[in-house]
Structure formats: structure tokens, C-alpha cells
Image 1 (cartoon, rainbow, N blue to C red):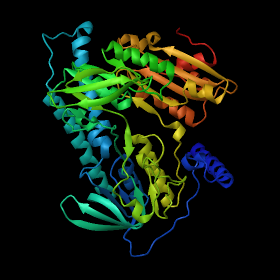
Image 2: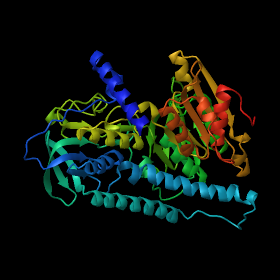
Image 3: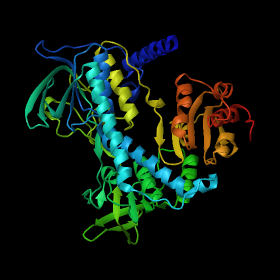
Image 4: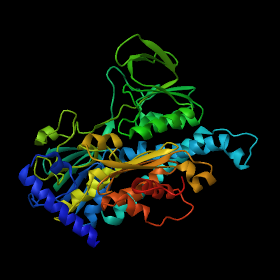
Length: 511
């Protein structure tokens, strides 16, 4: 705790210095070196200290934290179930299907090698979908229970501003109510990003929402977009037997990923029979028949070709959900793609109105939104908030998973920093070999002079769990030697991180 408090005091002083010199700087606006908050109260007739529009990961976490800090809190959610896109039609149901499909894939391709044999294995798709839906239902009810426990008022309906301190809510029951608050937090998340000339009907041409509930296993599935969501959902259906083709306009899959790791990752997916058409533009889709006919052409221009599929998943990213909230009525500014600019305390240009999560600049990730929500209400309560956007891990939940935090090697080169690289393959890790799941590696980048860790990238079956040791190390400015000299239990997958750290500042033992 002492170290954390010391770090926050340093962060606060640094942020104040930067703001005094350049109040519009990106560092000040988006850094988590956040300064103290001067609270402005509205009229005494307002009932709530905090009103949150949106009950997703950012909104519901902000609501619970606000209530824990003694603030009278109301959360408004249009869906009628809490958890937002993530819990209802995103992170959680996709991970359920990823796990179920992986179990099927292992049963078909790996169990016999381990001495476990079945006469036959088949997919019961309705049962698989039911398991997914049960997980979602249980978790949404769990959040409602947390609201009751923490005395958060929950209003089900679509909220929009009628003033900076009043929200008109069209309730799911068909009525209307006005919710008043001294401080309003916009936490409405994001929506599926469409492509010009393509209509998502959630029948044959689906978004990620539709891809989570296909009525059958497609013979052929085309995924438009080689980002996190497209690769995860493509992986689900490929494991279940679909012929999956990923079409991507850019020259690479997951462009934010470290280049060396990305190449290994793509090779791994190709071994799982996923096909990739990179540098390819989708000209049009025709779903008038039984399936979908795609017209394609090279991104640089050239002859057109066609591709047929039973279903097409459009996974071209997400866009902030800020339309229809009445922001223009109260003067809240948005940028050209609908994001809401905020300062280091999550305040918009309108006093008493804040924004967090996917509606503000930064990575569109549930865990980032949660951190935003906690920090925002801490400021509203007159305390210090802290989020470090440079330390937000990203994970692709395929098999193997890919997880990263900090800089890629390409980014370090661009910065002109002298650096060291340490790598360790899971083929040399005893636990990975013992369980016969040894594809992947750990890669660490560290500043050459100081050995301070700049970035960590892991491709492994459980990379999403392994990455947090690296996040914690980087949060406290650790060197690769700090990790290398920390005792790791044997045999564990985490020993690969230790060995990669050894390779960064010196030499590994087991390779």
C-alpha cells in the first residue's frame, strides 16, 4: 500500500506539472497520472449523487464503487439486463463457446493420443448454446444481486439528457421517468461497426452477436476482419467443422500485435485450417439466395473475384454508442467518430457530466472500462483515481491465446530506444511438454541501459492468465532481472516467463 500511495503521489505531481505546461496534451488527457478533483454540486433538488447511463462493465462497476464510497447512486440500462455487450453478447458468451468448441476439438483430435477413446464424438449445438446462455443468465443476475447488496438503484430503460443534471428514461415497461443527479457518467459503451454498402441482417450476414447464436454449423463461413473478435469467432466455428476464410483489407492480422508473435500466431491458425485473404477488399455482398456471395478485389485494385459462404460475419471493429443520448442538447462535445473527449478526471466539457469506457478515446476493452469507472467515481467522491493506459493488457482468446502488455518491438524501434530482447519457446517448458500443448513463446523487450521492461508478449494456451505477472512487474517499473530472480514453481507454464526474462538480461537455463 505504501508503494502504491507513493506511486500515486508521484503521478499526481507529474500530471499537474504537465497540465500547467500543456493542458491540452494527450498525455494529460488520457494518462492515469490523475490529479485531485474539485467537486461541483448542482441544486439541492437533485436526488442522486451519481447517475450512470449504461450498465456494462464500466457502468455497473462505477455504480457499485460509487455506492461503496457512500454516494447515492442510480444506474440506467436500456437492455434490461446488466453487464452490457461484454456479458450479454460479447466477452462472456464468446468465451463459453470458445471453451466448449475447444473441448470438442480436443476430444476429436487429442484425446486418443492421451489414451482416452470414444467410438464417436458429435456436437449437440443446442446444448452448447444452452450452456452459454446459462452462464450469461447467472452472471447478469449476479450483478443485480451486487446492486441490491450495495444499495444501487437500478432503472431499466433508455436514458437521454434533458439537462446536465436530468435524464429522461423510457422504461422497458413502456413508461417514462426522470432521474436527477449531481454528477452524470456516460458509460454507454460501443456498437458493431458496419461497412459501407453492407447490411447486417443477423440472418445470413451477421455481427458478432449473430455469430454467437447461429442455428447450425456452417459449411462455409467468411469472416470480414482479422481482429480479436473475428479471429475468436472464426476459431469457434472452425473447431466445430466449418471451413473458415478470413478476409482482411490490411496486410496483416491483428495489426496492433507484435510482428514476430503475429507471424507465429497466423501460422498456428492456418494449421487449424483457417484460411486468410489479406490485402483484400470486400466490394459487395449478395444474400438473395440460400447463402451469401461476396465480390472481392485486391486492396490496391485489380480484377474482381467471388467467394461463396453459408454465413458472413462482419467483424470490422466497434464504434462508440453516443448517438441518441441528447448530448447535443446539453452541449457535450464529440469527435468525428462519436467519441467524447475528456480530461484526466474523465470530465467532459460540460460541468458535472463525465464519460468512461468505450465512449472515450483509448482501447475498447471491458477491463479498461472497469478501471475508468472506479477512477471516475473516486474523483467525484473527492479522492484520487488512477488508471495507466500503458499497462492495459490485451488478449486474443483463441488456442493458443495471445496476450500482451506494453510496447511491441516495432514501437520500441520507432521510439529509437536501445533495447534487449529475450525469448523462450514453450517447446522447452516442462509443463507444456508434459501436457502436450507446447505451441508458442514468451517475448520480453527491455531498455538496454536500465533493463526496465518495455513490453511482454505471450503466445500460449493460457497466455491470458500468464500476462498479469508481467503487468504487475511493469506497473512497478521492474527489470527483466527482477522477474528472472523471482522463484517460480516447477513445473508451471509461468517458468517460461522467468526463462524469457533470463534470456533478456543474461542467458536462459533450459535452452
